[in-house]
Image 1 (cartoon, rainbow, N blue to C red):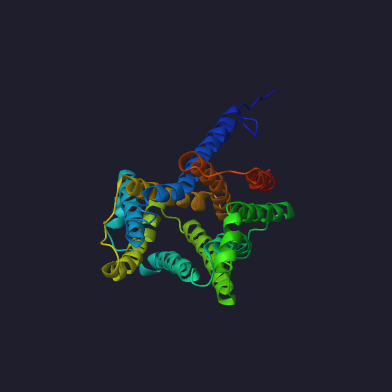
Image 2 (cartoon, rainbow, N blue to C red; image 1 turned 90 degrees about the vertical axis):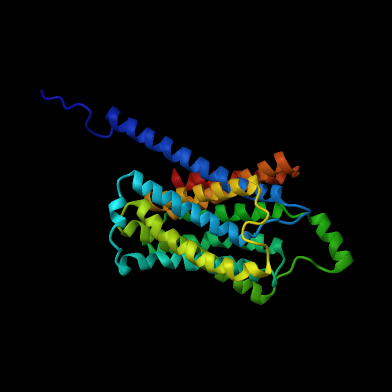
Amino acid sequence: MIVIQNVGTSSPARIRRQWVKRIQWGVLLGLMVLIYGSHAPLITLTKVDGRVPFNPSSCVVMIELAKLIISLVTLVLTGGASALRAPPHLVLVAPYAVPAVLYALNNNLVVLMQAYMDPSSYQVLSNLKIASTALLYSVCLGKRLRPAQWLALGLLMGAGVCHSYSSLDLGELEGAEAEEGPRLHITAWGLFLVLVYCLISGLAAVYTERVLKSQKLPLSLQNIYLYVFGVAINGLSSFSSVASEKSFLEGYSGAVWVIIAGQAANGLLMSVVLKHGSGITRLFVISCSMLVNALLSWATLGLQLTPFFLLPVSMIGLAAYLYYI
């Protein structure tokens, strides 16, 4: 009788590799959730007299620049520097400009939308980007989702709406309505802009995933292409507005540099998810980060959590179970 050891799905070596991979993904996703969730509380901690003391557009440029530098260093350390000796073909590099343009467009849309709706309405309606990303993921990438997975994404979007709703101070809003008129409002133009914003957000994520997976290049090199355009486009936007606002590095504190480092790391980790995972995983990371955001705000800023907070927590847990199990 011939006995073949360590072959098949029950091989100890194979099981060990699977567990190592799961642990690595767990650490990566947990770190991303923590960074995403700490972003808003950190920005709040930087405020002076209720205002952000630094130029937000310059902060975006610094984040893009940090990601570019880290990608360059990574490429050199992994022995891929030879790829930079010859100029790349335009056909190879041009697709990486599209995400930078889409994200820059959405950053401007966020500012424009505030004139047509209140911030709370934007916070609630922006959860529609979960639906737009899922639809584009299915249509553009040809990924068929099971009915249970569609239900999971619906729960994820519902959890976002519930969390946004639970964060509204309805008593304060009612008092404001009595004194100043209604504060919760949205115009038809504002609703249209929200839909465009959610569509662009989903398109940017799906397109980036498609580009990263379709080209057999080192991820660090692909990141260089991405962030060269990111630095260029956001740099032009920043320097065109810096004359009428704050100077480029004005108001930078230790907390601001922590924000830059965290967001740069998160962007690089997200490229790993899009290259080797899926954009749907990104949606779960963002949704889970809302809960971390609330907990950190409770611990550091004194945010009052209500029992209603348990509803989005349960919905996200159920969504993850339905989608991945």
